[in-house]
Amino acid sequence: MIDLHTHTNESDGTCAPLELIDRAMAIGLEALAICDHDTFAGYDQAAPAAKSAGLDLVCGIELSTRLSAERTRDVHLLGYFLHRPPAREFCDWLGGLQAGRRDRNRRLVARLQARGVEIELEEVERMGRSLTGRPHFARVLVHKGYAANSEEAFQKYLDESAPSFVERHAPPVTEGIRRVAEGGGLPVLAHPIRLGIRDPAAEEALIGELRDAGLRGLEAYHSDHRPWDAERYAAVARKLGLAVTGGSDFHGSAKPRISLGTGFDGNLSVPLSVLDELRKL
Ligand code: AMP
Ligand code: FE
Ligand code: FE
Ligand code: ZN
Image 1 (tube, rainbow, N blue to C red):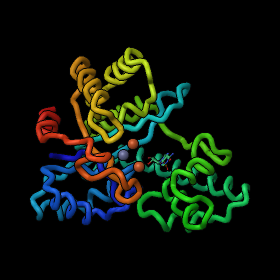
Image 2: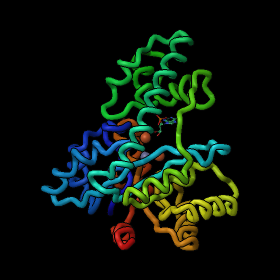
Image 3: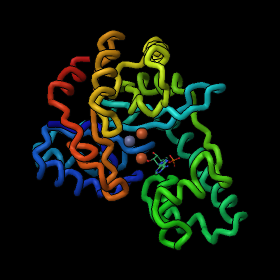
């Protein structure tokens, strides 16, 4: 069993990179990919420990993009096997995304303060390490009693539907695909179910468009996918000539029902052959 989609506390997970390696060894994972949002810090810390433990650790990243300038739906793009250290152009581009995130965070704090919430950017940033995201805002809001739990914090303050929601600059997914490929990596569409496209034909057409833009893989196996979704996505991948990937999207106690390797209440088991196929590309 392998897990090609996990987060550490360098982004919005709660497990330190070394702890994640320990856990992967403890449950006997044959390979692990760290795919933190917008940062390689977790992977870089974990790499030496993985090497001495004999664990096959894959370098990944998860990027937030939009379908297009007009279609603003969030699209999460995974990049695997990017050059380490990354190419200068990729680093600069990533730096721009990180700056956009900080700008969003400043505006979000202002909006929350305008709603009477006592919150400072510094205390939110203290919750995170390399990156500060809305999950860290949720932790502060829960800690201070503004919400009972993270879900409620998102609903009341952070979600698209909340009055204090602020947009973040995110590049079009086609730009993300191009940047990952130019950085030597393999661009993969994360958890396609979250595109929220109900009509399977429309969904396949969109994934086809992304394939034409350079997408190389589809995350068919994911904690959010029911068995029939996973089967559908594996079939779409085969039809479109995309590689299949899979992982739990483990975030530690930030998403307590998702377990490393085995997913949401045990709904996942990704075989090593998936990684072997990916490496052939
Ligand atoms: P950000 O990248 O800072 O905008 O934060 C996005 C992250 O927030 C996602 O990757 C999810 O992990 C988390 N998230 C988004 N919506 C929700 C929600 N309704 N409840 C809990 N977590 C969420
Ligand atoms: Fe996340
Ligand atoms: Fe994601
Ligand atoms: Zn993820």
